[in-house]
Amino acid sequence: MEYILQTDNLSKVYGTKTVLNHVSIHVPKGSIYGLVGKNGAGKTTLMRIICGLTQQSSGNYTLLGKSNDITVRNNMGMLIEKPGIYEHMTAMENLRYFSLLFGIPFHDHQKILKTVGLQNAGKKKARQFSLGMKQRLGIAISLLGNPDFLILDEPINGLDPEGVYEMRKMLESLNQQYGTTIMIASHILSELYKLATDYAIIDGCCLIDEFSKETLENACSSSVQVSVEEKWMQKAKDLIASRYPDVRCEVFGSHSLRLHEKIDLADLNQFLVENGVRVCGLGANDENIEKFFVEKLSGGQAV
Ligand code: ADP
Image (cartoon, rainbow, N blue to C red):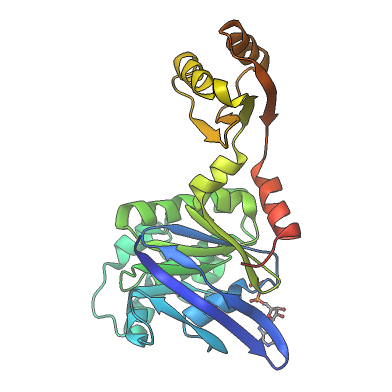
């Protein structure tokens, strides 16, 4: 897999306080990578290091395939903490101003405003913008220069439900239409879950876990586990495949099968028994996403 960012044991110490402890993450190219963690976990510190706003105390990272090369940041956009916009300017004036400041010669500003849904902001000054509009203008500024990699720290913090929805749609479209890889930190699990394709959980300055959406869905999907004697495994598997052809069936060890769908336990039991397979155990597994994250955060071991 190709990674746009890989960190290797990144640590940050302020005085005697460790705020990031040997964090190694892998951000796949083209992903929307969610950094999940409570306030104070170390998410912003990690992003600040990647963006060159602070120096790591130890460890390394490779960004867009290069380590120790600050020029790669020309292909990056970032929005960390409050968007630094000029309140007395319109959205368009802000974009023109920052283009000049960053030395970006020409850009289709109208297209960027459209991308972030501010094409109709017109002559309105930024001070009259809602929080969501200000956040989107901040993202528009970070999009100057067509970055391949966008780093956003809590962009949905404080937004109302409509603002959250618009932000999500906008980020999805950036990712899908332009292939922009997005790393996004948030403590709002439900929103990250809808958006991200990959996740890292950070707690108490450590990486607790890193996994894909597929892994998360597998861990949390409703499933049914069947146990049979070893000699009946193949028969049970064939019978299940014939009766539930669209249901994914996984083999666990020599005795168990897991069906990734919430199917009727009594039906399954009767079907197997009537076809000569003795069922030793049958159970439903109903995990949910929130519980999954909370368990990771409360009981997680650093990796
Ligand atoms: P998060 O973004 O997950 O809320 P932060 O990275 O902002 O977490 O903070 C992680 C820890 O680092 C917090 O305990 C915070 O107080 C501490 N911290 C952040 N910046 C500094 C700093 N400049 N000096 C000392 N401690 C800091």
